[in-house]
Image (cartoon, rainbow, N blue to C red; front, top):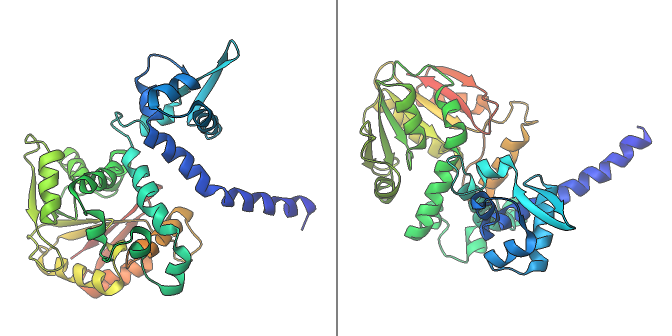
Length: 346
């Protein structure tokens, strides 16, 4: 081993050690409204003006803005020995709330929920249990009671769950030719991000969003417009209540919340009501069968440890679940995005 390679190891570890700080710098700038202010401004602004308009200290804001420049979230130019800041294209597209592709709610959820839970990762590894009790000081460890503990929280979480589909939903729905499936049911479909992609790509399709009654009510009031008539809603618990008959069931970012027995229970229930020749479309972050990556999927699996009963799985693990549930065909499509797609056929 060369001395150069030797020296790289500490540097790599120091980069890992600072990872949490990068997240908090970005989400703090989001929370304070830095990117929103600069998105709306007519030109670059100096740090003292930004601080005044956002109600922060000038000293603290200057440190934050400098760090955002280092992260390529802001650009800076010097005028008469004063630093003027503006958003980069990255921030305009994904961090300003007004952008159609904004991931603001996605990142704020990570900051306000995932970050707190991961503080207790050591306990989660020791116990093999989610950490809501320690992170939030509440008696319940039920995921949905935590996520939907008030209407305000429900709206934030629904924005978070829906935001990601604005940047990669089409990749998920177009991974396979779904045109043969005209009656589609999106289990846990929330605010309809994937449903919109379905009806956009497949003009002959209709989509029923099946979710908890309070989520359905929220989506109808705040997210889905009356003009989207090919999207309908069905309130219920897909573990305990009947599931509507359909040609295709979309199950996106659902199975990773649950242990294998619950996944098998849900997939078997879907298989039972699925029309002959129909199928199930799973959208999940796939771990390689050799368990070496990709890193995003492995990190997401750690988040599942501290928040749920589930994990991210390999294609082979999904194949076993689908086969046990009665599905006899399975196709896997790696999308190159955070999430991948599996199509199982009845």
